[in-house]
Image 1 (cartoon, rainbow, N blue to C red):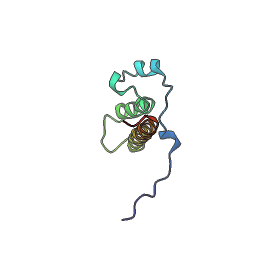
Image 2 (image 1 turned 135 degrees about the horizontal axis):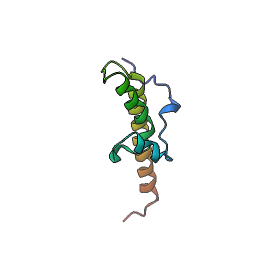
Image 3 (image 1 turned 90 degrees about the horizontal axis):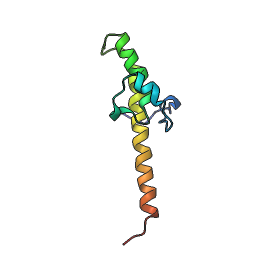
Image 4 (image 1 turned 30 degrees about the horizontal axis):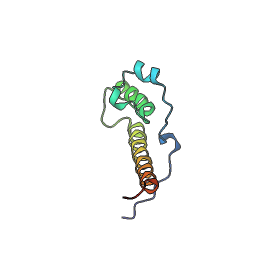
Length: 89
């Protein structure tokens, strides 16, 4: 019931300027080197340290998924602005 009581986590903000060398060293696949890749490095480190325990790394996983959601919202807003600025046929 209710829901929507979410507090913004600044740690989960997508970053445009990523450390590509760090992602390469962490062996992040190219498909995941996006605006949330910096969080995937931390998540994968936690996963390896806990031997991929599904009950561990909850905070890191939530932060990574939240970043993906914020990135999605940014893309939606960019598309809306693009549609408003484009001439109608």
